Image (cartoon, rainbow, N blue to C red; front, top):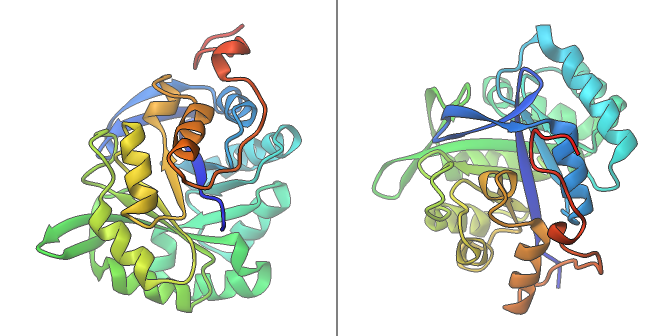
Length: 270
């Protein structure tokens, strides 16, 4: 049986990690490299870095971050934000990222998924979907950091992404983001059950039960979270051990928990 993955997400703004609630009210969570080292030591399965205010002006910062991460991390990492061309993908992968995440650009130009998979492999192409429930049994896809509705049905768009060669879907519930009230199990299960590629559930993780439900009821292949890890509610190891204890297949290590290693708090120097 394939193991499930626990993935910390680091939203980047002006070179710092930030976190908000339902995509607004951002507050500082620390230095991306410090947090990346922490999650590497906690045996995170992967990391995702999303430049939430990406533009061509700060592309240099993103490439520099990718290069620094590649030198220090021993786990795969994904970078997203402002990636809109094959050259953008090539630059990020050449700098050291294992995968790229595309969102708004893929909706405006779906062929970017196809061409990205053709040139770099499906395993490199993650399509991020920010979705909001807009009616009974309907979830709509939004772009530009959750600001603009597209009219696209979430399940239909996920299927098209798979057909175009995406290797993975990163599904974020805007309604649940940062709320710590639990993942949107209904849309997660719908999309997971409709696809043959992995689905990462995002938005709403606050308790061990929430992670368990996303991976079992929601049928997700991985769970992505930010607040509970950045602000010290849980370590990645604690989540993985708890899930393994409930029968969820996890990749475990013999490393001690973060409290036993004297890990630093976000934004502080040791």
